[in-house]
Amino acid sequence: MNQSRTLEQERAKHAWQAVQKAKQDNVGKEFGRVARSLPADIQANGLGQTLAFLRAKGHNHVFDAVSDWAKQRLNHGSDNLLEWITQQATSEDYRRATAEVIAYAIWLKRFAEAELKED
Image (cartoon, rainbow, N blue to C red; front, side, top):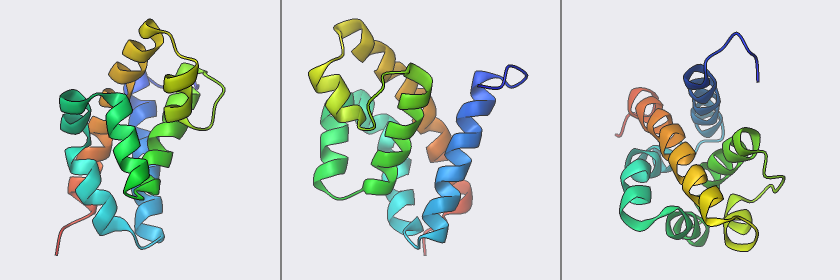
């Protein structure tokens, strides 16, 4: 991570790129709908349950964005955040991952609201 950037700037940059990729891949409307509720979904249902839901419903762009950010930030070594938290993470890892993903999801939500207008 670039030392001259704050963690919030890094989260924002990654989230912005994820939203732009969703627009480019023509999945913006779905991505936006899912991203708008993501922080609340994680708080209400837990990180593992929310990730499982994203996977089950085929919300791969959101799932991949969250997994990629968590891999960069938490250095857990797995490409799949759900796999890591269910098979390798300690309870402390899980708490850290939840807090980090919620902070990241807030940026996704903000940018989705700004960039992915609902028709």
